[in-house]
Each structure stands twice: as structure tokens, then as C-alpha cells.
Image (cartoon, rainbow, N blue to C red):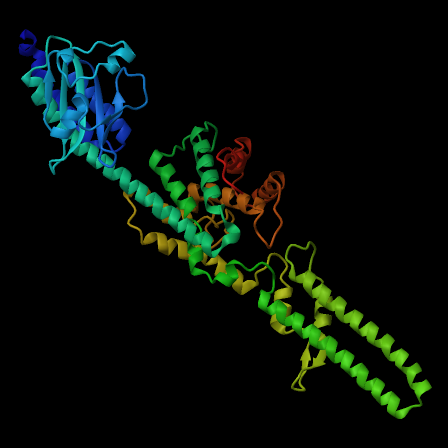
Length: 499
């Protein structure tokens, strides 16, 4: 018992205080539990220690850490063994001879070859008086565990219980927030199923490229280092970068062709009506011929009418086929505007006797779209999604570490030369995190195979377009080089994310 009067005894409370401060600052549960176990082993002068957390749903203790056990996890029924007894009763147990105590299970010693002699097992009790865990130290290095050891471990366990509950609460909040993020992504994709998986893929690419920037020793990234929280910030911004699409009309989000389906069907029905009108006009002319001319002469003249009918219907079918082809934004080549205008200038008499053009002004405007399926007004509405995203994300009370999520997402369509939107930012006015996301967002959009208004490009084809964007001052060439050299585009394949 002489060792308890040594300076070591005086050092323990001071050490306990320092450990307590460290425990309060740590939020990672696994790191925290390792810290607790290390402190417990040191404070109690024990050979080894184990830490169990209570699983109320299963009525078990599960070992988060067990020094020297060589197994990932041990589960013990509450009420079974020394640790189970302490968890059940909330009372500490101090045993000077483990094998003389009937509650001690010798099975673990037999499996590991370890000889347990002395045991001090202390409950972790929260502020509500509930046992949330058990800390067990084995084999005092100098004699038996003392009353001082009991008091020190009880004090340490009290601090540890608070720290563990805080860490568990932090993990629960993190899981809750992750669930909110996932639900938000599902909300986006439910309104725009054609982009399913886009947000997750962009997040994977963007985080991968940001981590590559972190490891780069070459300029201009030699002095750029993102912290763990900043990487998390980038990930959240990437997952939520398109959330503002909830503020865009659904018919625009899912517009696959230059004309909405209802408008295209209207043109189709119109051309059917025109066909019937032409046929009816021909039949009337035939009737007139039979009434005016002798039969033989009338029949000869009818042959001419039939040929005229065939030619007119053939022209009509070609007109409609051209409209159908032009309506598809995937078809390559510039729109033949001259032919489109010629078709529109043709007219017919409607059911009310009014003369109408084959195509209305709005139909011609939409069919004249040179790239994609959106006209100028629709494109502006689509572009508004970044502003909707920004305003939505600003409503969330982000922590200090994540405060730039709205700004990062807001700028993912800005371009280095000021040609992007919504604020036409130039060069370094754009956050590096946003520049990283831009490269990844463009790559995924180009290679996505689920967009009805475009064909999917190969990775090589998408990278060629991105290189062209670099030359015209749209995209950061240094980031693109890292993206290509690091094969960031393969990350979704490695993580099994569907394209």
C-alpha cells in the first residue's frame, strides 16, 4: 500500500482533470472511447481495461473496446458476469480474486490464455441516473484495487458518461442531418427523375477532386488544404446543389423535346385534319366533274386529281416528318429554318372557316431551338434553380464549420470568363470549392445516359468538351488536369453508384 503515498497518487487528480477537459472537447465516439479506456487504464494502474456500452433494446452490453481481447466486439447479457451485474445493479464491484467470485466467467481467459486476478468494474451513470455503460479494469499492477482507485474511476466515469452521451447525441444529430440531406435529394429526383443519381455522383466526384487538391504539391494548389469540416461542407453543397429545382415548374424540368407532348399531339391532330380536308376537297372536285362532264371524260380528269392528291399528301407527310424530326433535340445538325418557315406559311381552312397557318408562331419558335429542348424563357427558368437553391440553403442554421454551403452551391454554374450565371462572377471571385464542383457537374451531365434530350458521351468525349471549355475560359484547366490524371471519373464505378 506504500505506492498510494507516492507522488503518483498526487498526480492522478491533476491527470484526471486534464483527461476530463479532453473528453469534453472530443465529438468522435470511437476516438472518445479510446481516450476513456487509455485514461482508465492509466489512472487505475491496471494491466488492461474494457469498456462496454448498454444496448437497452437487446438487453446487452457490447464492448466498444477490449484491450488484449483480439476480437472486434463482445456481447454480454445484462445480469450475466461481472460487467452484466454492474450494468444491472449500478453498483461497482472490486474483486481481489476473480476465480473465487461465482459471477466471474472463466471462458474468456480460456480462449485468450490471459489470467485474470483482480477486477474493478465501475458503472457509467448519466445525469438521469441511468447506467449507460460499464468500465472494467483488470489486474492491478501493484497489489489490489483500492478505495482511491474506486473514487478516481467513479469520478472519471462520471465525466466519461457525459462525454459519451454528448458524442452519441452528436452522432444522432449527424445521422438526422444526413437523413435530411438524403430526403432533400430524393425530393429533387422525384420531380426530375431523368437526373436520378446526378447529385450523389457529383458529390462523389467533387469530394474526390477536393481530396486530390489536398494531396497536390504542385502549383496552384501547393498551399491549398481543405480541413475535414471543409470536405464535409463541399459534400453537402454538392449533394444539394440542384435542390432549387423544386422551385422550377415540373413540365420544364422533364421537357424531353422542343415541343411539350400536348403541343406535339395538337400539331399531329392538325395535320390529320389537314389531310382529311385535302381528301375531302378532292372528293368534292370529283363529284363536280361527274355532274358537269361525261363519264369517260370525268374519269380521265379524276386520274389527274388523284395524282395531285397523292403529291399533296406526300408533301404533307414530308412536312410532318420534318416537324417530328426537328422536334427531337438529339438529332444532330442545325435546324433548317428556311424549310421550317416555308412549312409554317402553308395554310388551311379550319372547322370554323378561318384560314390558319400549318404552324403557329410559338411552335416555330420552339422548333427553331438550336441546342437542347428549352427556349429562351424556359432556359431562364431552369437557370433560376441556383438562386432557389441559395435561398433555400440560407434558411438552414448551418454550423460555423459549414456556413459556406449556400455560397458554394450558388456558384456551381459560374464560369471563369464571367459567362456563367446567376451573378456572372469572374476568375477568383468564384470559390475554389465551386470551381471544383463545376468540373464534376459538367462531366456528369455530359456522360449521363438518362437525359432524354441528349445522347450520353463517353468519358473521353466529355473530357474533350471540358478541355474546349478550358480554352474558351469557362472551366479551370488545372482542376481538369487533376480530374483526368487522378481518374476521378472512375470513383462512382468503385463505389457502385449507378449511372
